[in-house]
Length: 260
Image (cartoon, rainbow, N blue to C red):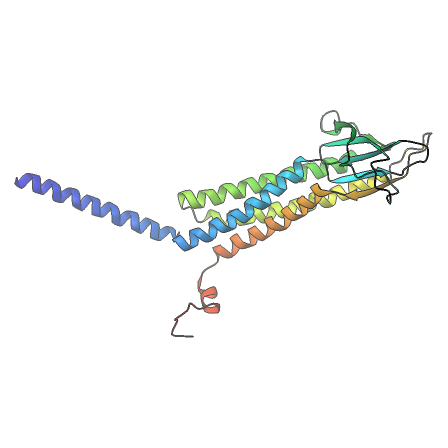
């Protein structure tokens, strides 16, 4: 009986010591429920930006190229392109809005011919409406976009490690990754804009002459702009969470604080 009581007391002491170590470890990690909730809220915001970024990079509605409608023809041509492929569509002029001088918008139903750009594989330039792309600029825009997605994935991984393993030192790295992802996405958008201008100026002197074109940026590029802004905002919010709490506590004292 005495030995059984001794073993039970020893087991209780071990459990109490393990509980104290666990509580001390959580205190050292500094992940209070309030702080964890803030991190999860900012991660949700960054997830929205990540979704928009993937949607933007993976679709081909960055810009629409429209030819002018011609009299005596029942069809007209329009194109839309992104980072990876271009689609040329033949549209019925009867479907084009009456007050529009150019063919489009590209979302109208019609016969589409979509091809991936070959400068990723064979290094060949693409021909669109008798105009030649500048593959170096298009390739640079795509590479920068991929780097943006890579930085975004690393940021998500860092924040997940903070929440799951308590590695709070990774929160600053995650903030840098999200901010860098937003900046790189904006760089990709700007480089793509220069590639569109280079395409419009790359008309060949061959006969028949290249048709006149107008262009307008479409919803994929809009998703990219929104994603860049949200990722930058998420990176800033994560960076603010890494700062010490005493400056913010002095600016925003809690209710009932005797110093107020």
